[in-house]
Image 1 (cartoon, helix red, strand yellow):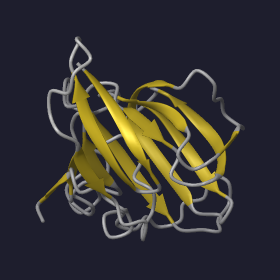
Image 2: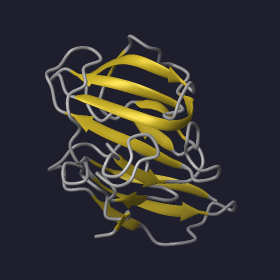
Image 3: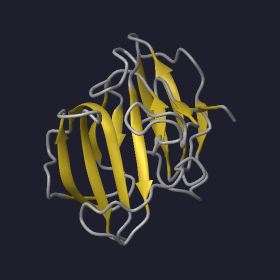
Length: 185
């Protein structure tokens, strides 16, 4: 079965097509308002936003979870949320696992952790555009094996290249597609 996407902007439909080329299910409308930060993953086949900013962190302890975890299927696509530069490629050397640090042209920094792999056509130092494929969801670093998710952080800028600007809760900033479950609400 394949998925075919139609539409423009932030409202589109997804239709399941079977091997014979006929429609298995009617089109499902996915609504993203366009009033927030671009969502960092493809919401299919799974999208659960765990509203856990400031929760417990294995690295930073109680109250130290510096991002939001977005549950997904293994190797779901991960995208740049803004135009900017991929300033650091993390190579599975610590709790973050495989990941990227992206600095937007505005100076805001976005961090993507626990990836399974990187898009073939991007490297550290590359300029990227919002919506460009940069990697795939995984469970590297200190993620639970089989607990595929993207740990996503937002750190407002401008700031030094690897500055330690305080993170902010990404959930109210994200344009979360209507097919995603947010837990807890």
